[in-house]
Length: 196
Image (cartoon, rainbow, N blue to C red; front, side, top):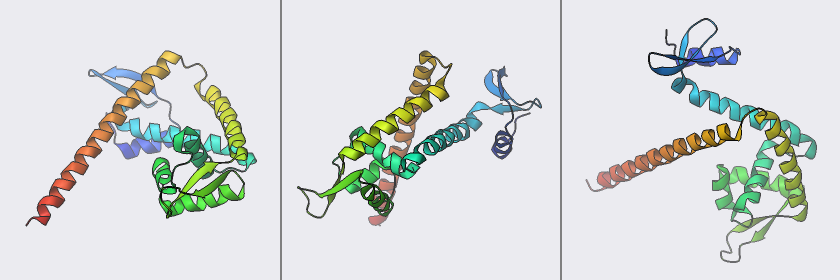
């Protein structure tokens, strides 16, 4: 019997054990009670759940260093290429609204981890930079994250991880293409609506 997503969610939350099996030519999970769950129905839920658990664990380990998840996520983006970017661009990289970012940057600045400077090319904007203390905190964050990766990925081969990342890349490309197509359709609809 195939079950719906809401039932999957409640079963996953109550920590049911899953075992993979193939039924009717498709790969499915079987629950302890014998119900079959389509892996495509549970993929997004399980991926989101894993991401939340991973972030929560890192958040727990970074709290003694004075960083909340919101703060260390911003620091990670600064480390990975956003250092020196305008606040607006940084908000886009992080995936949050500008006012939310300003609040986080205020806290990071009070901790001495970042500094905001007047943008030399646009006087209305500020750029965000890691301080020396911020770079030292990045080293702590990297060390904590490395230990967490070892903990979470123990016993998983590099080949399995490479395959997993390749699948993620395919899903991301399809999601971007679908979003781009949707944006193009919206632009067409808006454009044709304006010409009436």
